[in-house]
Amino acid sequence: MAKALVIGAGIGGIASALRLCKKGYEVTVVEANGYAGGKLHAIAQDGYRFDLGPSLFTMPHFVDELFELHDKTPANYFNYHRKNTICNYFWEDGHKFSASGSREAFIREASHSFAEPVEAIEKYLKRNRNKYELTATLFLEKSLHKVGTYLSKQTIKSILSISSLDIDSSLNTTNKTHFKNPKLVQLFNRYATYNGSSPYKTPGIMSMIPHLEMHYGTFFPEGGMHQISQSLYQLALDVGVDFKFNEPITSINVQNKKAIGATSSKTAYISDIVVTNMDVYPTYKKLLKNQPAPKKTLQQERSSSALIFYWGIDREFPNLDLHNILFSDDYTAEFDHIFNKRALHKDPTIYINITSKEHQKDAPKGHENWFVMLNAPGNYGQDWELLKQEARKNIIAKINSVLNTDIEKHITTEHVLDPVGIENATSSYRGALYGAASNNKFAAFLRHPNFSRRIKNLYFCGGSVHPGGGIPLCLLSAKIVGDLVPNIKKHV
Image 1 (cartoon, rainbow, N blue to C red):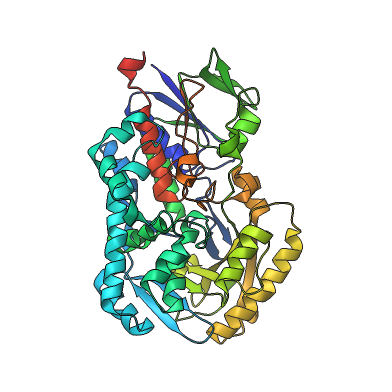
Image 2: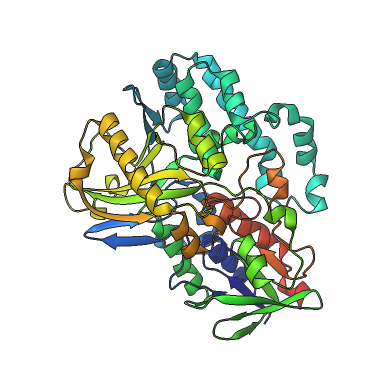
């Protein structure tokens, strides 16, 4: 039987393993950590459970698809429910807005809250839907680096409609052409952070992201975000995928311009196919030291990282939901600090995720588990101990002001994760959450392809390669890899 080796047990690696297993390969996944899931990990501390990584779950059909691929009933492994509220938004001046998961309700309520015409919001959301429908096949579902992708009718249609995609303007400029209220512009600017970019740099095509939230919905997985990776891990075990943990790969072995396996800290693996779920930067710098590296790709600006405080809170906040945003008063300065000064702004935007709102067992009765996150620059050697101390003070001051509380006296336990910790735990270069940033219109084309042009039988998946970071895109990267890898009959 032909063998496939997957490096890294992040969600992209597990999904790739499942797809290769279905194609008939004998699949081994080798992981440096002692657990499966990569960034989709969790901890328990002092009676609280915290998801350590991604906190937003949308497009769950990409997860279900993997169970169905193996003729399994998804609900036997994994369950989730749709949220009626996407996010609660708060501003320093006391303005609040609860974004409904219903498109019609969102339009009606946003029009009232921000004094914007219903027609303007409808037009904006319709344009976002058109952007997605025109480009999803090209930019998300297929390899951008194969000629065949550009020979379809859909691609030609996308090219002919390029003026409607807002590629030549920033997301902020695009949003300001539709709305007068700076708060609604800021709300839609926030979606740049979904791929670790700046709304003042990333192209306006990114305005398609709110369409995805409203059309497909936002969800809460039973058991928390960690259950996404764990359910797929269990599925992989059930269908015969072999996992090796606590075993970092030290090199991908290449012979006659063909990947023939890899060497780990414990042994050497011979394989017909090698798929790396490791961040593309350390893949080249550590595992392919003797191979030519794609310099332009590796020199791309990294996405933002995160500074996260995990707090056990000894009271409940009825005005908060699963997802909450406390906006900065100076969004422009905040992103200037992140991407230009590589620092944290004194007035940060704060994201608070509280899974105990949906799953009470994630915190003791009458308590809440707060995942408090700031968008942060990557790790460029800053004094993170000092930055964490300053950020904590600024976070507490803003929460106290916006929520009219004294939050520090309610913190019963704390765990902190910074860009250094993210980089060390996940091998994400500079702690970037999404690989390269999408701060220019060519970023999608500069992302590393899902295959190697120089080395046969070597493939790439995960958030640092095409089509990008985040759970849905990582799963799509695995799907693209599955489509590119030859079938067993053709391969043998």
